[in-house]
Amino acid sequence: MAEGSAPPPSIRRRLLVFLSAALLVLIVGAGTVTYWVALRAANDAYDRSLLDPVLDIADYIRIDSTGARVDLPQKALEVLVYDHLDTVIFQVRSDRDVIIDGDADLRAPPAMEPGEHRFFDGTHRGEKLRLAAYRAPNGFSVQVGETLNKRDRLVREILLLELVPTLLIGVAAIGLAWWGVARGLRPLAHMRTELLGRSPRDLRPISKAASPIEILPVVEAFNNLLEQLRESSTMQQRFLANAAHQLRTPLAGLRLHLELMLRRDLAADLRAEVQRMHGATIRAGRLATQLLALAKAESVPEHSTLRETVDLMAVAGDAAQDWSARAIERKIDLGFALHPARVRGDPLLLSELLDNLIDNALRYTPAGGTVTVSTCARGGLAHLCVEDTGPGIAAEDKEKIFERFYRVAGTEGDGSGLGLAIVKEIVDRHHGAVAVGARDDQRGTRICASFPTQ
Image (cartoon, rainbow, N blue to C red; front, side, top):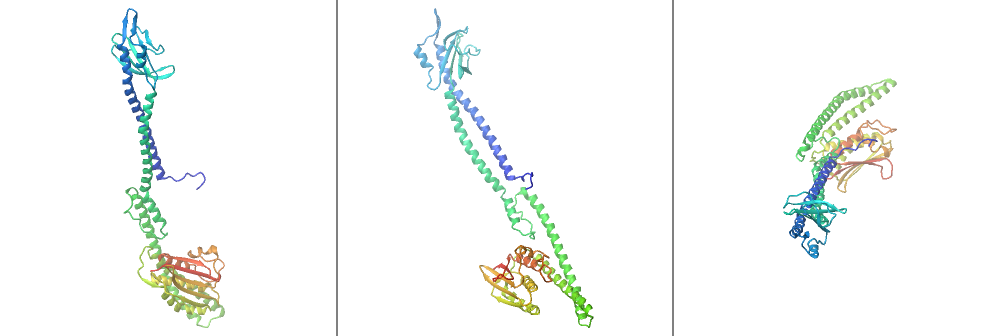
């Protein structure tokens, strides 16, 4: 990643952040509503019980010659305002707002009509209170206040009972959202896996059957691109095949004329020039043949089903007759160690593969060397190997030699660099693998093509 560049956006991250934020907002909103409902319920429940002593005290207010008083014994009055959790205080005021009994630190209640009662919040010596006040028909006001201990406890209990399930549901919802997002994005993962598993030449369209409707436009656009690439590749292969085919006829005629000239008595310098032309013509003809073979190998779809059973031993046996004369001409010992090895494939392509391996080995093996062709079936695979006593291949060149027109620097020979590229193409079309290494004696080169057995 370049310095300062932002990381690529993630659909999964965006969805999960949005869903998590939405759930958090809902949980906070649910907590707020639950707190308000709990506070309202606590106040409603305890306000009614707080009003009872107010009305009882108001019933016992008496006016006589000594003035107004609460006609209750002190013990009875203490029992009336007793609470084991909260501190309860009371106050009685006359119609002239004079304190008759109770705590003098309480503020006067709000204005009320006779017979009216009210509930309100207040403070007493720095402590919060909930108060109930009542104005009797005779004008006297009675108010009773209590601290908020049991109300707060009830609110906490309600919050706990309501929020714990809410939080558990929230956590479960986030887990389900994670699973749902992963499941929803699974078609994209499948598409990615399918595309990564393809070779660069597999231009089949992506199946739209399992694609969600949301990504169908992307799939269709990508399939259109693949169709254009497929048409371009087909045109390129057709041009290559046509050009190679058109070249073969004039090259064959030119080669024939040069061979006829070489049969005549020519000056030494002219004969040398004609021989060089003849060699160049042979190489050009071989190149045209290889281009045709490459075009044919590329035209076979990688996903096609190869139904014909081919014995690699028979393919190698046919090659022995074709290449023996060439090996004798170059003074190379061409040997065969053949065992049955059956595969499902195209016999013409497999024969072309072996021809290119043998031709490549003969070109780079010096006179007096050996080239050995072997076939066998082992480990569930059919193996076709060609090994030689040539100069070998350096480790850094083992992957590059399968590239088109690549030749190892410093090697002798008149190859075009297409032979092993054709081998790799044919192996890929047969779902096989090709390996390059040294012989058992660590000399020369061994190239093995392995295919699934039938």
